[in-house]
Image 1 (cartoon, one colour):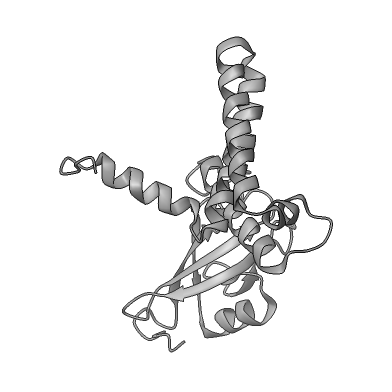
Image 2: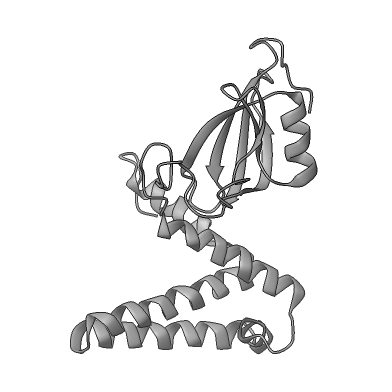
Length: 203
């Protein structure tokens, strides 16, 4: 990575984003030394303009920002750093420096998909997901059908709590089915996105 530290007198802005929720957590600045330390340690380190020194986020609070990925922009003068934060990010105690709650539960579906992909690739013994893949496509499809029926039963004659429980089972097994066919949950999202377009026509 060949960053241009000259434009801002030796500094580049670093946008910090939660890798799981996609929420922007904070903005800091790095000089070349801070950038190198971030890469070496896997914990985000900034250059503090007020203290005029390197500052590893969490060095006092323990609320570190553990690096997942680092990307440079097209002009090579700004960083986007995806992290797994440990605790709240802002010094005020807020999840983000914009006082947002760092929650996006729907983003967990991607994590779940990645986990199921990993199971499909590694097939560890003793895993329920592995046993599903080993049972074959017909059994997986049958399981999706069973979970769909149980979801309908809870929706019509059960409780809201059981509806959410059975619906979660249905979604999980549907992702396993998609994975076994070489697809991901994002493929369904793209299909729904296309259907949302005014120009979409039913096949």
